[in-house]
Structures are given as structure tokens and as C-alpha cells.
Length: 427
Image (tube, rainbow, N blue to C red):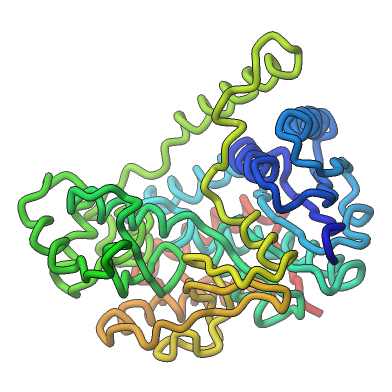
């Protein structure tokens, strides 16, 4: 592989993650000589992102070869890494995932990775993911898939069960955990070290230490949060007091997995802010490409995501430790099912992705997460078999669902809305 690796970026036209990936690629000195192939379905938008990539490449001196194509299979030939940041009609369908269950009395927080929304996100996304993966198995079987798309846990679980392609899911949630804990303790974030394990968006902070001294900071966190602003992460702090550990990466994400998660807020995702950001990004991009304005300074700096760090760890055999990665369990967390996607620290080198086990979760925390493990397993089976019967069963074992009548009604409505995307995706 040396320094001639080929990196294929699916979803390069993404307004949210596309820029982040380009910022990281062209801020790195470690990918010099690599080929970056941008893939997108909209040729016009793809052309604009490719032109931005070339400008960033020239401005930074990163030394990559930039390609673009709307033909995924053409891109996969000879690929060493495939980065996935795709979604199907993201905001329109996500709004339905959130609003339809509420109409039938389901109280939930985001409608993305847990509850009914998590199920339908899984049902429509996995067939697309398996299209990618079957092409990879044929055209670049040794490539590493780096997945940034949700629902992370269910995608990695499905691939662990039904594909031989190596993959890792990457998420920045762990940084939110560290930032929240540091804020409560009154410490700079960079002075705080965290070690966590669990499910994506539902990790347990196993170790909280001072980076310089190694001192255990949990006593300081537990003491400081008692009198801290009561409006800051109140749901997460309630569980901290009950279980003794900081869980998840924010009340909204954590609440997706629990029957009482709505107590942390039921406002859902801010779609209006998301649409404003997309419009602003599109306008700024047009101005940059026309030469009317300079490239914004933050576009020339790393985003904080870990995709490029992972690629470089493999490419240069760095034995690089990443704070977290979503991987197929196989006992990385011994008291969660082996057939499950878990989020744990990982070490990455030329031999691949190596989960770092922090040992068993605290028993009560493991029991809390085990309920969601069964939901995720059932949702994956419903998706890969395109089974409405299994989908209903997945809803009825989900702690967020509080009514059989509501489950049947929302299933009928959302199944119809997602019918164009639901299909069997295993031989």
C-alpha cells in the first residue's frame, strides 16, 4: 500500500460531513501521494466539492490526487479505504421518523438511532449499505470501510453478521462526553482523559482521569455536578447518580434508548437550523469557487473527526490508538452479546482494527444496555429480510414503544413511506 493508497469517499456531496472530511484530508501530512476519489449522485454538486478539494489540496500542499465520479463501481477498483457518509433523503424521512410516532403517542427524543426512528433508519439504510459492500466484496475485498453514517451500531452489526468486509464505525460522541465532564469540573477539556465502552451514543465512561497526573477525576465530577447548573444535561446526571457512571453523549442521544428518555427533552432534531446551515454552506461554497471570497480559515484546519487518523494508522503502520470505534463485539465487552456492535477504544495499524477491551461493564450498566442489544439485533434482522413481521417484533421489544396499537399504526404508516427503500439484502 505504501504511500499510493486509494481512498474512496461515498457521500462526498454531504453538506454536514463532506466538508469535515475534506478539512481533515487536506490538513494532514500523512496522506501525501494518495488518491482521493469523491463519489456522489448529483454531478453538479459533486463537481463543486471536487473543485473545493482541489483548491484545498493546492492551498495546503497536501499532495493528493483528486478524482471525482458518479459511478461507484468505477471508483471501487483498487480502493484501499472506503469512507461512507451517505443518507437517503435525510431530513424529510428523519422528520417523519420523529413526527409519526409522536402522532400515535410515542414519547421519544430524536428518532434517529433508537426507538421507532432507529428501526426505520435501519430498514431503509441497510439495503443501500449492502449494495456498497457487495460491490466492495467484488472489486476491493481487502479495503477497510470507515462508516460515519447512522445508525452506526446497526450498520456495523449487520456487516459483522453478513459480510466479510472489514469495517469500523467512527463517531465524535466521545469528545462530547469529555467536554461535558470537563465543563462540570471546571477543567480545560484537554486536561481530561476518558476511557469508555458500550453502544454507540450509549457508552459508559469507565475511567475519567487527569491527563497529566493520571488522578481519578470521578470523585471531583460527582461532587461538582451536585451544585452545577441544573439545566445542563439533567437526564444524564440523574443516571449518573443512579448508576454511578456517566453514560452516553448528551441527553438527546442517550434518551433514544430508554423508556423514560423523553424526560431529557422531546424537542427532536433542529431541522430548521440544519437547513439554514446547508443554505449558508452552499452560498459560501459558491463564493469561494467564484473567487469572490477567500477560503474560510476554519476550512483549512482539522475538524476533529478521526477518519484520517484511522487511515494513516493503517497506511503507515502507526499502531495508533483512537478513543473509540464502533466494532463487532466478539467479547471486547464480555458481558454484552458477542453478536453486537459496540463502541470501545481501538488500536489501528497495518494489520487492521484491534478493539481494546476495558473489561466487563459494571453489571447494572450492562443490564441496562442489554435491553437495547436485543432491539438492535431484531432491527437488523427485520431490515436484511425486509420483514414487516420482524419489524413489528423489533418495535414491541423496544423500551421506547409503550403501546401495541401505536406500534401497529406507526409501522403501517412508516413502512409505506419507506417502501421504495426496503428490500431483502442478503442472499
